[in-house]
Length: 261
Length: 222
Image (cartoon, rainbow over all chains, first blue to last red; front, top):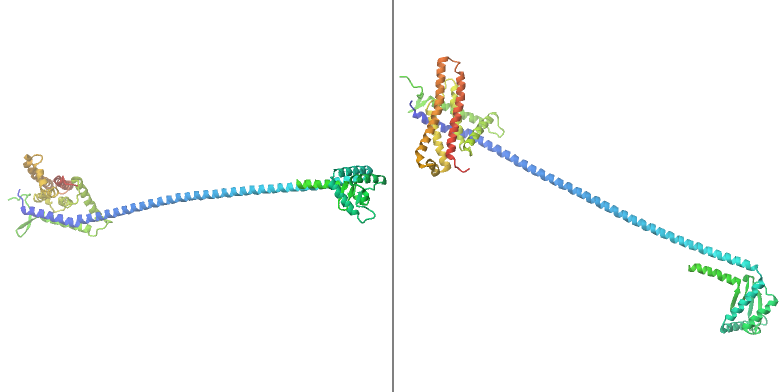
């Protein structure tokens, strides 16, 4: 077997040329396009990762926003509930206060009305009692009443001190000055005092006031308004022992008790 | 005088240089591969068309195979090893074309390719490891093994050449004998078998070259 070295050399050169040609027209272009495709794929992957990250961030943001909205809603609801509770408490308090005030006013009005009613009833009762007493007294024995009145008048004059009696005497004396008849002492009764009893009146008066002639004597008068008893009338002083006076004082006392209460 | 069937078939001379049939066939193969590559990659697009996709599949398959053998970035080795495989497939399968003879059936072409592989192994080894580290490999594990290591480099290259040449040449002889003895149609199964043998021999030659290169560059930092 023989070897053609020219052929061997040419084949070696041919192969080297073929390596260069395929490197130029096959491997390099395909390597470039593969690299470009990988770059694009990587870019798409990077973009996809960025989009995923953005989506994740957006999702996170939405979840946070939703949580914040829920929190805000709960807070607003709580505030509204608190406000409603406050308003309800205030309304309840005001209603209670108003009711209490109304009850107090009603009670006060009721008490006042009751007092007014009682006062009116007492006045009516007093007037009715005075009227009934006057009616009863007008129908009783005037003589006995006159005697009782005489005794009370005597006891009253006895109870007065000497200065008071001296003033009465002076008053009676001044009232009788310049008069020919009708002295400074007048005895008024509801019923006329019989002449027999007028002496007893004069004796009693002289026993306490001295000589009645110094005062121009005693004048006996009749005044039906007195109902019973008598009044010893001096020019400037009146000693009242009449039933009308007593009934009037009793009525005033009842009224004064009502006013005090 | 009978002409040896193993002798180169000189077609013409370019000056003092004889041009054999194997060389002409190789030129045709080179032109076909280059034109096919140019046609498939003249309008490269990220969205590959039909023929571009085929070329991409072929290149990526070669890249994957080389990477699995060398276990590092395959792109520096792809032009040599990929071209070796594509040329061997085309050369071995050229037998199916009527009137064509595979260049690898003559000793010069496998010898040229073996020499290329031999030189490539040392080129890549020196480039990867440096001269000192690369040459130190020949005295490991013991300097006494230096002659054996050198002999191993030569014999494995020689075996690479002979394996390819022997398989393709013997297939051609068998096919010729069968045609001579049995007629026209009987060799068809043998021709189909020749396709298989051609592809397998191309694969073996390329893988062995990749193994030699991978062993030479081993120790290179990733």
